[in-house]
Image 1 (cartoon, rainbow, N blue to C red):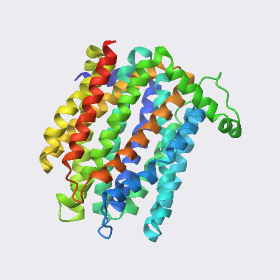
Image 2: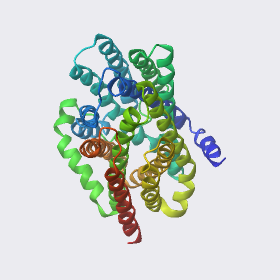
Image 3: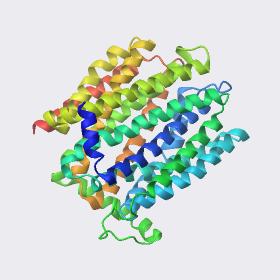
Image 4: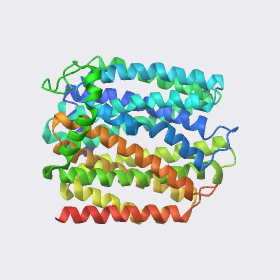
Length: 420
């Protein structure tokens, strides 16, 4: 298979191998942790979850990073990225252990959310750093290939982590705290794996000074403005349009995620554990779609161009999403999860490539942090819209049609830009 051949080529780069190891362990831990949170917040038998409560949880966990994200970018362009991976994962290890203790203590929900918020907050630095560091471990000619395989491998690792979480729940009598502790152990392994990389290998360049924290924070506004101006330059217009398209696709994906959560919780299963199993199947099929995207994107982007591939992904989603989702039946919805995995990840790989190829190394941390913030805001916004539209059982024709229209608008707009 071509993907196996490409992976063998990339694995010849020692730096890539080690960076990939950190990504796999970190995102595998994320998958474990996220399933534990979903089970505790959405599928606990004593909780009567609504779309509004799901939206509120997403807002608490994600929206504050609209403030953290710009700071993360400025600091990532000054801090050694390898140290971010080391200390960030050590901190997540400790915070995840705190989350497990809070789950067992039956504390007020707000205290639990603060703990979960802290774990996810550190994640902003780690994921943005992984993307910004990738061009430092592979050459330019193999960057598209690396963008296809590395983030997708991380997503698959998160999916496997989610499956591991389900297995741990079965062994540990549905203990979400035990699942969180497994995630903490994986975060610790990721921190130890980062020690195999030289501190200066991943950048940023030495020309980017490492000022005091206070100086970096006070310069955040100026640094963010400089990053936005850099992205707004004519040479980087394609990157700006790709980021906008990917943000809207993330909105669509978020709205459908909330809908599937409600369907799994109330429409398709009589027991909460059955609903969680259906959600796990949907996540697994979406992960399989991510893998297929990694296989086909280098070929498709090579023939259509990264921008053209985004057009194709959005157009396919516009046609297939309503056809598969409108019956509101488990089988076609699982197929939709796979299709949206392919299209969403395919567009993301193309967007990552466009941004990395267009943005100077000294700005990558800032741009990828802005990218991350846009993802969070879009996902939370989608959850809020879904909360207004969705009925209690999750079946909403208007939501499905609205999402399809958005996918179509993305495809048309990007196509017009590509033809200019």
